[in-house]
Image 1 (cartoon, helix red, strand yellow):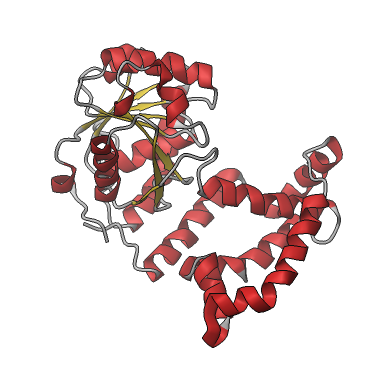
Image 2 (image 1 turned 180 degrees about the vertical axis):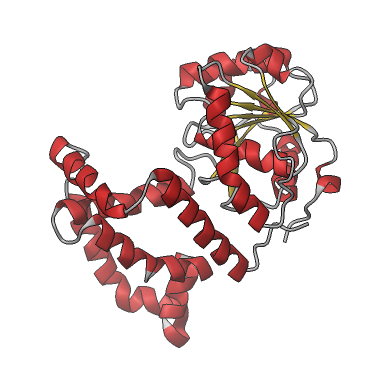
Length: 319
């Protein structure tokens, strides 16, 4: 496991979380549980109540992972003015809307007001750091630190440098996320959507197609995944799984003997039209009733099960 604990976070003590939505609130919960002081900056009305609610919802999972949640919000403050919020901070974790114009406006303000030594990271789920950094005087300071939802629980953080991101910034980001108990993966090049979201989108496209064609319901498809690909990929990713599926010959044998069939399947899928048109949206929306719980209830169930999986895989976050 990566080094964890407050000692490993030396140099990062004050964090500005920009954007108080689901991702920002989840980051805030994790930062607080790691002993950091957090200022949330979001001008939207009602943001403090919403963020505190998200943090309260995350607390049981954080406690189950061995983190101290006894005074979780003692170091939490709110500052709607972005310029004020980032002054004196050691880290800015931006979680604003996925709009380049909005991010440009925010990052101009952040760079002009954050300390020169602050680590600057964006949680963007698809916009390259290179595009965001075009408005910065020092683009080498910005890096993508893209979590997988929810950040307080799922280990992955994709660390994606832009064309001008300095190696020092990349290493600082990697070391910081590792010290939080995360699994940072530095990508070797920029690509829209990064890696995890591209995989998720590709798989979800086929999920939507199968349900809209009446092959299975959403609940049935979820059951298929959680009783096949889910457990398999929690232990071995796709490449190692197919390497093992090739028997003694490994992945080369798999490609030689099963690759042609897979290529045919790819070609067929490419011809299938998949879209969130109105009939598809109605069908999927109707079937959400089969999930059997409120969003909060389902999230709590997800967290309990995810913690059990993480513990089974040795992914404890304990110090």
